[in-house]
Length: 475
Image 1 (cartoon, rainbow, N blue to C red):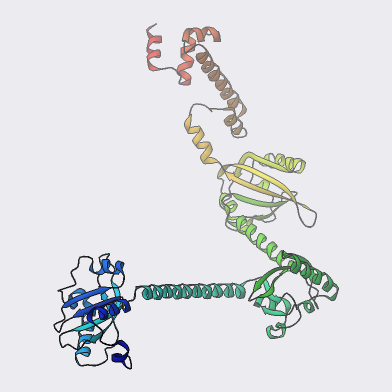
Image 2 (image 1 turned 180 degrees about the vertical axis):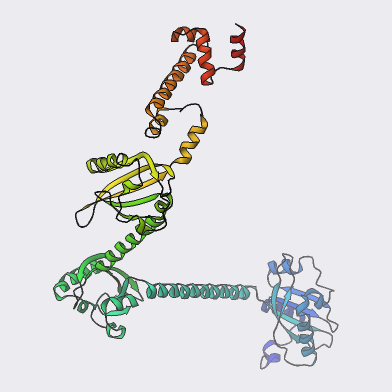
C-alpha cells in the first residue's frame, strides 16, 4: 500500500488504473458480487489464447472456469475481500485448451464498490516447471544414492566372504586401511593390529625391496602388477597382486594375496575327488591292476557285470579270471599294453561268477605310479545290445567284414569261413547287378554262372524280387 496515494498518483482514472493492473499482473479479473466475470486482462498473448482463446470468460462465473478442486479457494478469496481483510494469495488451477491445467496465484482487492472486485494473478507455470525439475533431480539423486548403497553392500559382502586374502592400503604411505577375514587368517594376526600398520612389515625382510619397487611401478604407470613373496615368520610363499584406484581424491591399492601352496593342494585334492567320483559312478566297468594283471580296484559297474557283490571278492585276484578266454585273450591284452601302452576296443568276453557271459569291448592304458611302478587301467564296455541289433538286422549272415571280425573267438573257424564265403558271393552278385543295370542274364555271364544258378543265389541272399522269381520259374 502506498503511503500517500492521493498525492503521488493523483486522481487516477479508470483507464490508467486498468493499464497499471494489466501491466503488474499476468492475469487480472474483475468480478461482481455474484462472482461473475465482468472483464479480464492478460499480460501475455500466449496465456490469453491458452486460457480464454474463445472469449468465454466474460459473463461466466469465476468458479466455472477453474478446476473443481480449487473452487473453494475462489470463495475464500471473495469472502476475505468482502470483509475488507487483506486477501491471502491462493493458487488456483485453470483448465487450458491444450489439456494441461495452468496454475495461477491470485489475490482479491475490493476497489471501493460493493459489487466489484479485482483478482490479480501471477502465472506459476515457470515456477511449477522449476519445481518439477527440482523434484526430478532430487528423485534421481535418491535413486543414485540407493544404487550406490546397494553396490557398497554387495561389494562389502564380496570383500568379506571372498576366500582370497584382500587388503586395502594407502598408495602413498603403504598403511593398511582394511583387511578381509581371509587375509586375517592367512597372516595369522588380529584385525585391529593390522589396521594402520605398515604393509611391508608383513613380509620377509629380504622381499621388502622388491615389494617397494613393485608398488612404486604400479603408482607410476597405473598398471596392475604382481610379485612372488614370502610372509614374515612362517615364510609361506604367496603371490602378491596389486591394482591402483582412486577414491575420494586419494590413491589406494587393492592388494590380493594367493597362498600358492594351499592353492595347489586344494586343486590336487579337488581333482582327486573328481576322478574318484567318476571312477565309482562310471557306467562302464573300470578296473585298475598291477603290471601282472592283479586287481587293485574296481567300480560298481564291473561288480555288476561279474555278478559279484563286494570289491573284496576281486581285490588281489587276476583279471584273467573274468575277462576273455582263460589264458588267451588277457595274455594278448597284457602283451599289447606292455608293448604299446594303449589298447582300443579289444573284443572279448566277460564271464560272470555264475556262468553268464557278456560280449564286451576293452580299452586299456598303461600309467606310471608315484613309486615308478606301472599300473594298467581297463575300461570295459558291454556291447551285447549293439551286436544283437546288428545280427537281428540280417539273421542269415553278417553284413560286413567288421562284424565277421567281431565274431572271432565266439564262432568256430569252419562256420566263420563259410560265412565269409557267403559275404563275398553276395557282394560280388550285388556288384555285377549294379554294373549291368540289374540285367540278370548279363550279370550271370559276367560271373560265369548259368542263369538258373544266379536265380538260386539271388533267392538265397534275399536279392530276388517276387516278379523275377516267378519269371524264372516259368522258364
